Length: 391
Image 1: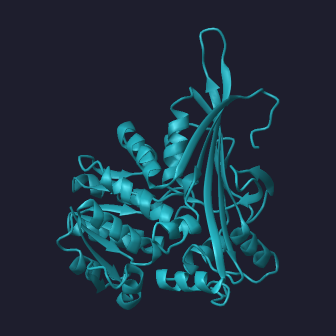
Image 2: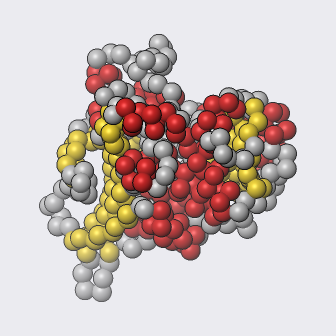
Image 3: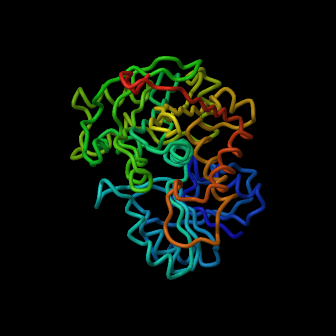
């Protein structure tokens, strides 16, 4: 397949390399090709052109021969890039939603009819979280006759003397100033930023960590396709703790924009290697837990079950052992997105969230991620009516 990847940062560059390894013809676009080349590496032969994601005509020119356009840039450009894909009659993939016009429904669905008319598929939110988390929620829901609650818990940490984010500065800042979306008693609402502090037990070696409500995209798709009563997403780890502290100190506000000294640019692989050699950056972790509670009906009696899935992604140290210098978040997002593309159901049309994919596609993606040093475990336990949902 001929694939154009727009956005050659930490995630997009690694994704482009993984797609090339799959046998696709790949080229990239970025507003700063020189910076993109640093992420791709001097040895990479993947072409990269100067493309502004705000410029529809520029995207169309760069992607005119593409069979698929991958948006690995900021989610604020989703609809522009989707229109470019429609113009060149290409399939479309992205990694997250922006949720500005409607905070409770992914904006990509606005182009559903146009993708059906063009007989092309737009597959949205195909990273690790959202993306893999959506698939795990759907997997658990299929084992139940009734879903009462869904919880997604994420952990991100950087063992570093200086602020080094695993996300781009724009994504981290947007996460810090955005109100989290929650789904309670069958209704959407906005929660308070960094609220509802909870102690959650992640799998070892992380263990117990504080988590708080966070603005995640899963809540903007899953309740539409899986009947449930409640859903929320919380994040923990030192990166999120830092954002929470700055917010409480009044150092973060939308009106003042991104304070660049607090949100540095994403480090290139060479810069990460240098930070490791200097001892500034020791290690980094990323993990996800998905908990789905509901009822399984039986002939004699109904059973209330809690189905938990845990994903532990390679640490920075383990990624280094593979010969790569990238963060666990970029590693996880790129590898999961590459699996969505490898198992892309091109015979379908419209705009689909991960949980809407056919069961065989979803199973193939979950099985495939285990081959990339990602540990995925599932556990089902019986829940008494009086027990609380969270651990």
